Length: 178
Image (tube, rainbow, N blue to C red; front, side, top):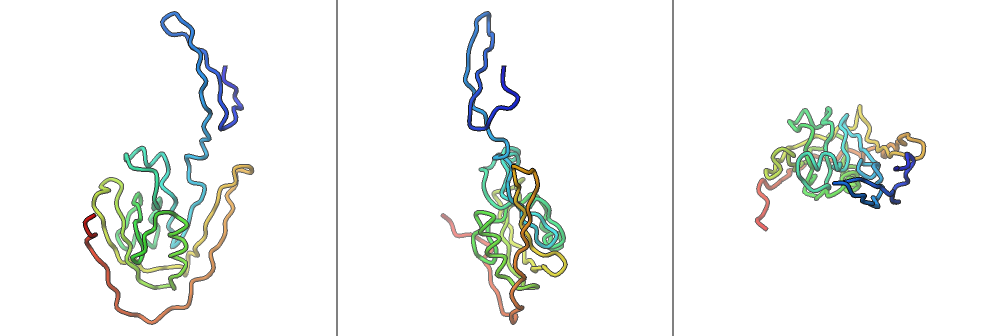
């Protein structure tokens, strides 16, 4: 019988009877916490994290990218819903949550930035929206899961840089063919 306290990355021995014969198997024990993103980012009352294994399986996509789990105030007001993958912010590719956070921390409050994203339900179509950074009422913070205590430890990001003069911006609506 399997141990109720099996340790991740170990294995358990299973014995099953099939068609009147006994078969023994060594089954690896997986770490279920590895399937769930360990860090979330809150900004503008929105919640982002790395695309989880579960959502990747649901939508038949690779398990990578920045995922908007809750669109919140900042993204919803510009027509961006939850369950989208963010490809780039202000022309900078955001393959992971750390990159997204580093890029987003450089924006002053009220700056308008183009956000390129794809809906998981239609991932072959890229969308672009102009988003206004809003960190006035909802400070940016990241929370990391502590698997030992079971609690989330939050770290508030530094305040946004001073507002800059408005200037003309540009974006591309079509990605170049690869």
